[in-house]
Every structure is written in structure tokens, then in C-alpha cells.
Image (cartoon, rainbow, N blue to C red):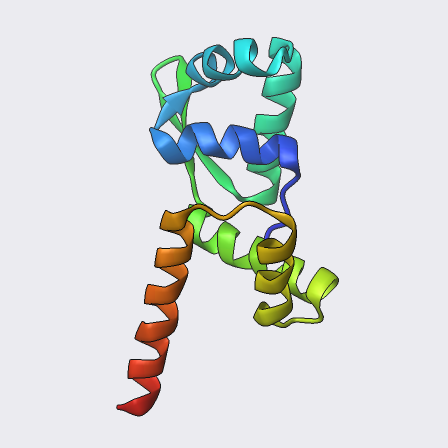
Length: 125
């Protein structure tokens, strides 16, 4: 799995939401919300190319960039890494932490209940 930094993940998010995109499009999407300079954004994009997380296809005089790494694959790896590093690879302590230290909305609680019910039904069948 390709390890990407938090800053690189911001670039990936732009591409995951809408690809392919030119480097100019990516710079425009990130410049204001991050305060990053154009050179910084282009450096991050080039790092992602080098890591194989992004592809570049020539389109006339410019390149179109698209994600190779899917959001789902990245989320899986990041969540697995968090579980392993912080919670000994176990989900229950993670959920316990959030229920004790974070405010869960009624919607969050309902979604968690539904997930548990679904898992119990799958185990029974």
C-alpha cells in the first residue's frame, strides 16, 4: 500500500471528487482553502505521481491527472493502521474511546446499532 501524507491526501481528495483534472485545476481547488503556494501543490502532485497513487495522461500541451489509489483502499489502510497503532488492532476499544470522549449524535448511535444488528444477523446465518 502506498503511504501518503496528510497534505498529499488533500490533493487526492480533489481528484477523488472529480477526475481527471489538470494541475491548474488542482492548484485552484487547493490554493485558497489551504493557503498553499502553487509550487507546494505541484510538488505534492509530483510526489503522488512518484508513489504511483496518481496517473498523468498527456492531453495536448497539458497533463490530466487521475487517482490510481482509490479512496476506499486508502481509507482501509489508514483505518487499519490507526487500529493497529493505537488500539492494538481491536475495534471495540476504538468505539469505547469515541463513546467516552466524543459526542455521538443520535444518528451516529442509530447507525452503530444498525451495524451491530447486521453483523449479528450475518453471524447467525
